[in-house]
Image (cartoon, rainbow, N blue to C red; front, side, top):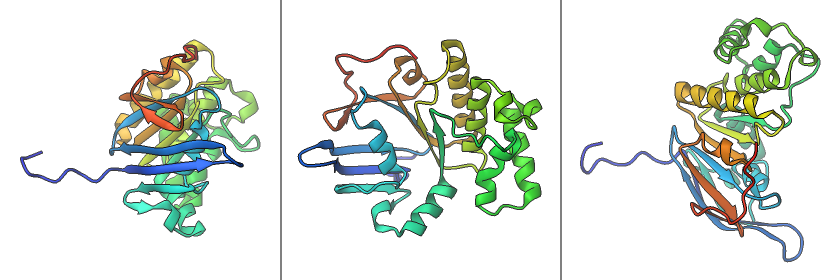
Length: 238
């Protein structure tokens, strides 16, 4: 970047974010976060620290009590429900700990879903889903049903589905929590490779220091706020 050139606008900018549940229960307190395009960060925290609440707010699935979540400059709280849904479908991808793979659809059909929701032509959806399955190392399993696949294979499908529509932001909630250590490392390596290929920004929510080590930087959620300072007690296993 040349001297005096403007820095690109953040992909995601969170300012003064606060959220509580019930009387006197503060989960997030004046939280701030900036994520640049192509940046991959991990957020660690103990159970109940507010990691899932933060992810729901970033995705526009919940509304903050105060503060703002700006995705590509758009304040999610200022959008209608339909506008948030369209933004989420087109601009975000999700990887869940429990996979959320539909049991009655094949691997290929599961990966095609985001493209179908965006009303992509069927031929394009099939081609892109097959390509992403191949990139994730399971191209030969496209006709298999979920019950015929291992946990690691299901998580690869989840990654393929999350990235097939080329989202600008990937949100991953404990994506290795149900996997053994060796499979988890393989999944983290695959995720990192795919993020580099697509250029998507990503937020990984995890309790695992091993998983967090795959990110560009790690933040810790404690007392409702994020900091780069490690917590005193952090789960180390996958």
